[in-house]
Image (cartoon, rainbow, N blue to C red):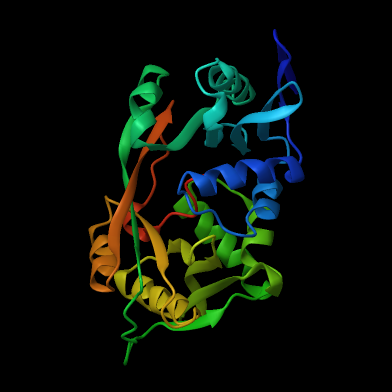
Length: 291
């Protein structure tokens, strides 16, 4: 897609190489993206990453990933500081929303933009709180949950459980996110009960420290086991981030008990009917960019 406007400005579909610039902007904004997120992100919807170019120079970005036939998620809405106040952001926004036309659209909005999202028809569902810190490793002696590294034979059960927690199928994304190459610095662990996968969590290297996301588990015990196992994967003294839905009180308590502190928040908002998600099973969202 391409939307040309006057003055040499154009919004069009970006390649992964071009959108890497937007990832660097996100890093500059303090959003702390993963160091190897783009391949997995683009696998979710290769056409859902747009950038605005002024005289050939990138100045704005937005991701508008389609899920299934009726859902979408918006992220990476950024205008470079030197290009703000010139209408580039609104043109980019309109192009992104046109791509998601007639779909329910979700986003995790930063505080500064929440009023604007409300004006665009988005309604608040709840907050996500970013917790960050060097975690305390306590272990789980006597836990009934077994933790294992995700393997291909787990794929079907992971996909089914992810569909329940995420609210939409995303098989192409999971193929790359879960079964990552070693050089991506990303690893997925599963909780196993009665020989069945009951939950999973992915930990990945970011610009600063590590993030766990998603952390999906049906019980606080399984979530704690996954969280501790993920934290044990990183080097001593490294910071870990977990983005926790405020609606899940046990997840908030888990993060605080591990020594992580709230540093940032977003508003989960939807335009259109919000999916009914099992928030008590969502102990950490996958990402603020893709939901």
